[in-house]
Length: 309
Ligand SMILES: [Zn+2]
Image 1: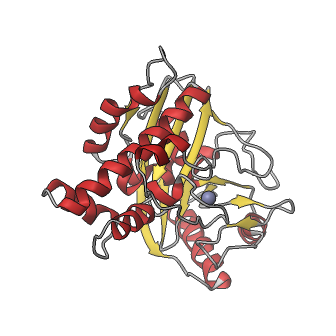
Image 2 (image 1 turned 60 degrees about the vertical axis):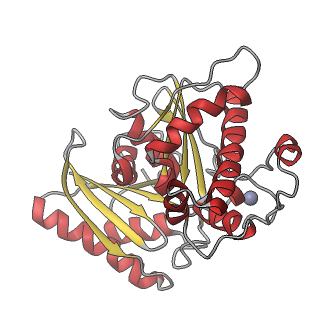
């Protein structure tokens, strides 16, 4: 058996897979937001319960929203319970087995490479547009990563000057990373809500703003026009610089069919002259891809963050 965990700020998703990565059981649990002992208890409890049920010692893979520091501790400010903790080491000790883990965007893209939206691509790019922006690259089936695990943080680079020229008065938002005007500060769900408030809209989340736009609301229309332009410019720059064979967008905003349609129209205007944009696809596995990708990590002997294997 193979177990996958997708750790989020509010939910921990758990999945059991057979050796062909077919799902056998899934469940979702509230994240113990600030209690590390309760967090360890939740994960070890689910693994031991599954071991008992299936009568074997399963392999474990974890996806988490963050990177590792030099000493192997997780930096995940959105999940305070595990932030700064040696999560992989502590779990390995309690579960008495090797453990693998990786950034959740890498897990998402790895799952989409194996039988999903970017299957067969030599180089695939994934972006998740949710509360924040996650990024990942998979080359010939392997996530590209560094020792620290920070490769693919495409949300944290400043938006292009051309956008400021096209949209005079575009606010320069501060980003959670400490910099200003990062792509994430505009194209995440949080960024979209901020843009909407700036252009006179009410307090709404990203999906509600999209609905208001589809209903023809003036503030939402102005805001969405800028949102799509910022996203197309950012994605166009990444496509020019990285030249992926295919792109998959995930996250609550990234999976929407309308987005793929408008991006297909706008992307050619943001590419190097003469270069065709790579196809931008919706994920096949949707929100379940993170758990499946975490399970798929266990099949890779070279997993970047394997602990004690
Ligand atoms: Zn940033």
